[in-house]
Length: 108
Image (cartoon, rainbow, N blue to C red; front, side, top):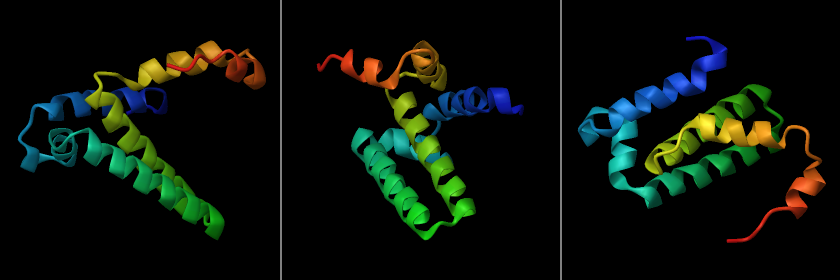
């Protein structure tokens, strides 16, 4: 697994586990339990990032952000999306001022 493909590789595994029995993998369990369970994990991990940051523990910050990214990827999988979709959006924003990008957002 190369760093430049790690998100895609994880997404591939998540897609395989989507159809597995809920007791066979954590990803399958989350996907079968539905969006509310996944969202709960995303917000829980966000809180853990905040606490690690306040503590100033760099290793813990890395671990909690990894957990957050993982659970966010489960949320993407739930919606039939992939990390590449997010990376494409980040690429689109790359040479746009953050203030200009934010001002151009529409509310749905």
